[in-house]
Length: 263
Image (cartoon, rainbow, N blue to C red):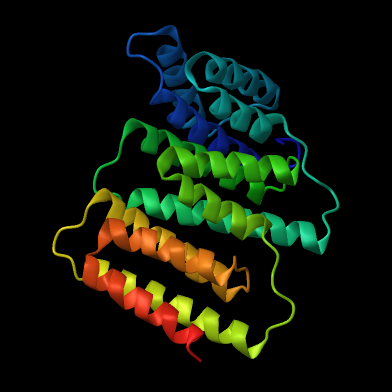
């Protein structure tokens, strides 16, 4: 929402959005020309009060023509969405967690050795989402989670989507028994072992990079006390090991898994 912002903040936000839209507008198009005119005007830093709404409306119109549905939606929310006036502590924590995961996803994409057009689009989308959420413009939490897991699926695997969904909606274990703590430590040990195996590779595949990101998310989730069943967790780790490792790594995981059962 633009009402409570200073002119400097409004100018910076307009420029940020227009620079994103410029990357989607075709060379020689009317939209590209209008974006350039508006950027030239805004970069002079002399924004008149009566120009704020017309520029916002024009940006929204351009987003509709050159951007995707989700891009247009994020821009409209950022420009015209209403800030939640009273957020509970629980709601603030949920927003904080969503922003944290968006930052994780951003970092994951940025570290990719090769970025697709979709990756670059998602980076732009994530930037807009973080800016919107930082300003307290929030839609329904379930809708935010759906949007976030959809992003994860577009840049990674179904497992990455499931991992983020679990981190956002999974329940923490309240009763931490000795057996639970032992299994949690063992799962983290296995995750660190797989991560170490990947780190030592001279050449890494695209899945190696995703696996490292997935492992970091799993460690974060498990440390928070959000676990699936022990067997499900280990099977998931074996699945990662099959893609990034060799039979020796898988055998080590199986031995560690059985060591708990033998006690």
